[in-house]
Length: 253
Image 1: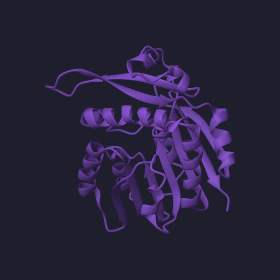
Image 2: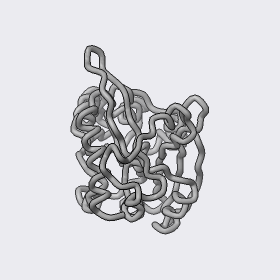
Image 3: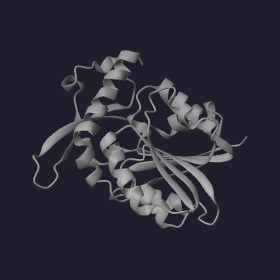
Image 4: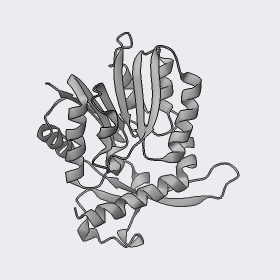
């Protein structure tokens, strides 16, 4: 993908999360069933350090702390409104045994891992965030960077949207002509969706979001090329339990 096209796609999402961040956060104050399933596989009695990429408004950090976990949980997100809400949550859920912290960061910045210095993590999470990253070269770079941030035997657990399984969401697919971006400049799976929501006493508005639709084959190829071993994958979420695809991949050494 040409850098100009990637930048235009990113601008769509930056504009969305800056303009609709508060309203979006109001719809994301609970974790999805697939995330709950993942949490059951992460031992609570062992102190560990985890990084959450695309942490949003802090819903997972709140659950993480409430489960009595120890070690550290670091949330990273590029949206100011979402991080502001996450930090407010952290004030009420901090403890002496868990370091709960949030940082601004953009996965499209090739230097985003530099902020962690030599710090290594036992696990990295990325729920519903990777599908907003344009371009296969960026997907591969991010997978490789996460591999380097993990301890040996560290786990990378993520989910990507499978909106094609929802007739309602498919009805929200919009033509690229609304953006001025040529469909020929895009990669297979790149999709424009509208988003409709209004907070109480606010004007109902419609926003646009860029989403990349990942296939299982695509994700497994990215895992192999970046040095991971696939250990599990499953579908979850939504009325039919198939609105998101979850993967767990592992750094062996």
